[in-house]
Length: 156
Image (tube, rainbow, N blue to C red; front, side, top):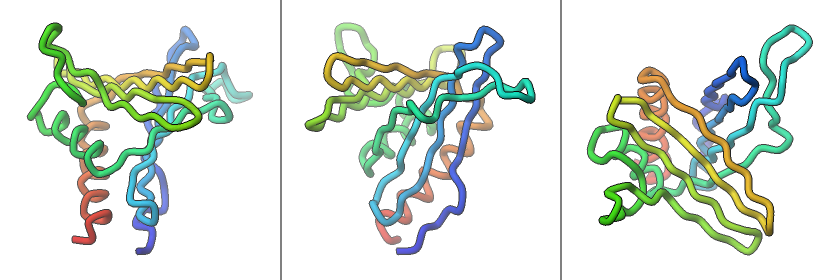
């Protein structure tokens, strides 16, 4: 199946305090997934714009069920991804584990209508967390990418 996108969908959330973050979403039709990569802000470029530490990025491979969980949040079916913890009434996030470590992706919409994304990756004793918000427009664009990913992955 040919690659459907020539570019990633990128979201930059620079902050004057220097603790911003960025994410990029890439449909990988040949691997039947969407790769989410996130990086922390690391200062400014020579032109004064924020720069992001893509060399130290963390990644999460979204399979079909993961994509469905995010779409359920974007469509307003549920407030967060993953199983619902009945004691706290909060979603636990999407958990992935492999021989090099584990990762948890939290994606949800708060009571004010703001979308939040947080990715936490642990490898050995080292843990990295990156998070930012999405505007409603960014959330709409992400929804289009993820719906298209489902069509490509399923061959519909």
